[in-house]
Image (tube, rainbow, N blue to C red; front, side, top):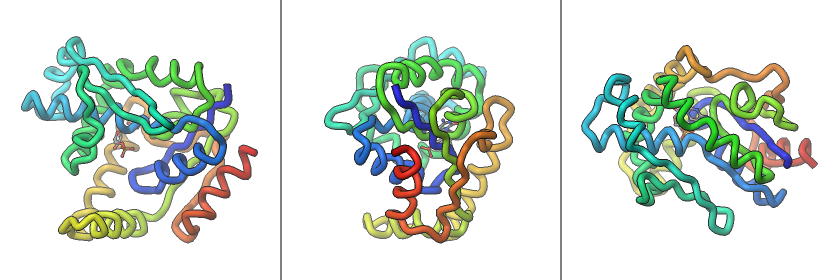
Length: 217
Ligand code: DC
């Protein structure tokens, strides 16, 4: 199977680039952030503080997370319920970042990710795909952009959907999440040594996709 890893910080365009590249290549696009978001949402539903490991670790015994694919679209199932929309709520982002710092949570989600990659050609995006989950991936990419560009993209995206958003609040959240994700002890966000670095700050969307697809082809 062909396994492609795409890592990078929040809002660097990983998911849209990976999705488009997977479509062109006929691979499955696996969004691993959705798994941490599902755990985060489960913790919020229980009313737990999302960085409270003492509450969240036992919660895992009664948590089942599955990914299903229909026509290439990923759905996330939490204890039998489709939570694909709920995990996109703004509060799910920081909840995901918080629970993802708990090593037991990462261990809980590890085999699920590897199993999908064992059975399918995949482009998998996340924070530790090239470093931990798929260290033998045929190609690894590290996609990034400046925090300002990432906040601006998110701002425009949300504005288009009709949300009332504050640019500075988005920028602050991105900086906070970058810090969280790259400073945790277990599997922090970092570029794998053999990853190809792509800064999308000054690249169009199509050029970013092309940079990834041409390499894989
Ligand atoms: O990619 P995303 O924004 O949906 O991810 C949400 C959070 O989940 C992110 O802030 C950190 C965590 N995450 C992770 O720790 N490892 C991954 N492979 C993917 C996401």
